[in-house]
Length: 119
Image 1 (cartoon, helix red, strand yellow):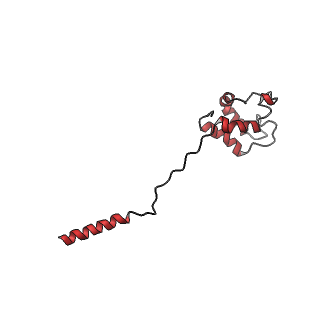
Image 2: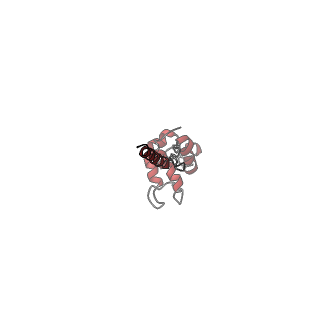
Image 3: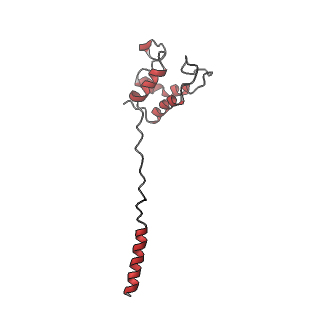
């Protein structure tokens, strides 16, 4: 009886130890991607691409997009217009002959997705 108990214990220990593989690592979750904010990300994109038309301080006479509140209010329309083709009515940037780069358009879209954060 002792022999069967010893064999069973050894067998169970062997099974348990084979499951302890040091090469198995706990899956690491990547750090969260920081959310885009108006002050850090969007205001720069606007200053670089919407000046002077939408920036009164630079002589712009179109609807001003130099404040968080104004851009937040019109974000859907801004995205719609910057996604148009240059030949479409309402295309922005008006003076541009080509669309904004996809990376710039994605800043506007991601800011909206992230919750229209100011800071």
